Amino acid sequence: CDQHGELPRDVVRCGAAGGITDHRDCRSCCARPARVRRMAGMAVVIFSSLALAIGAVFYAAIGVRALVRPRGLLIGFGIVADTPDAANEVRAVYGGLTLAFAGMFAAALVSPSPMSGGLVLAVAVASFGMAGGRLVSWLIDRAIGRLPLVFLSLELVVSVLLSIPLLRSSG
Image 1: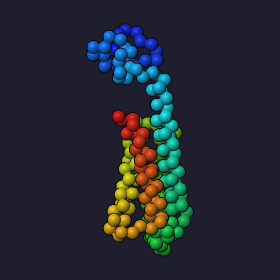
Image 2 (image 1 turned 180 degrees about the horizontal axis):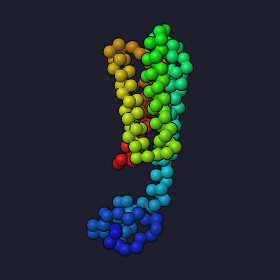
Image 3 (image 1 turned 135 degrees about the vertical axis):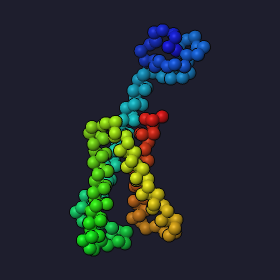
Image 4 (image 1 turned 90 degrees about the horizontal axis):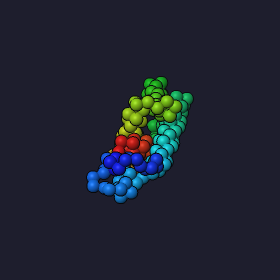
């Protein structure tokens, strides 16, 4: 369609012109108005921001809880962190690591950078990995408690929500 000269402002130019005599005959992206593209782009931005906010809240809640009350965090899993070393481990992994995840999401929301997508993808993959570990455990043990099932669900939701905008923007 680029060969057809001046097109209306709301028509997107593309290189799919082969043999087309009128831009209205083009069935590729030329027929899509620019306002539709802008609306789709805005939807991706809103969805991405929502996914980051949900992920940040999810991981921040776990992190703060782990730092403040490490001995009680894992009771629902049948684990009691009743020694200083156990509390240290809970604060490090469930506190520090999850707060780092939340911080990366907050940074990506406030000040997106070229690195943001990679950081978000890393956390999405880590969340998916945690869910995968829970699934393997469920298969091996042939049982899963209510709290591990809740976390499995949340980890899957967070990983999918974080991945969709990244996959959408790369394709």
